[in-house]
Length: 253
Image (cartoon, rainbow, N blue to C red; front, side, top):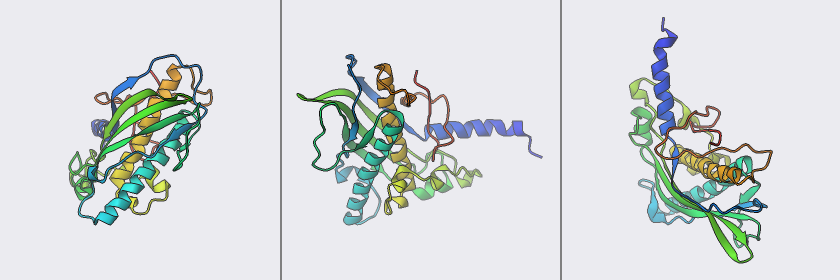
């Protein structure tokens, strides 16, 4: 008979690994000027993404281009969805749409996407074959005189730090996740579950930065509870097991 207490160290280790298999924020810079009002709406402009930053294995140029477009779309849709939940009304900026004064604009670039090795993640884990995703993000206030930068930051993260089956541990999570990408109806991207998870978690962390910024400005609506971002180099205080993949969920400081 296995004693529950003997399993506690392993459980704590798994939680720690799951937390590390996440997305973090760094180089955060904020405009601390007091704002008179919050955004009427937040618009997410699909990020720029040169094909050269995508490491997607031995695929044809056409398939890589399709995957790049799907990743850009999924990140925009996922970020808008998370912003609606945790910050303010939000939507993806349509092609040719001009954001009106009073709205906020989330824009940026994808700097790296590496699909890693799904086989190594499944069999070995603990970082072997992990994915990687990096972005640079700017949040601006739209005024009659132009865009006023409010927040600038970078994100970085990966999936695949959980133990693999070769170590005798079945963790689920990434392999069974229903991410923002699959929810957006992406068929090709469903072949990249690790990247899909990175998109999901990056969307969440972008929304968390905006959420806590609004809260500290006293502009977060009463129907929303502020969440704070996972700063790189700091372990999250809790792990939200209700998300599709292990990810941080912390109250605002």
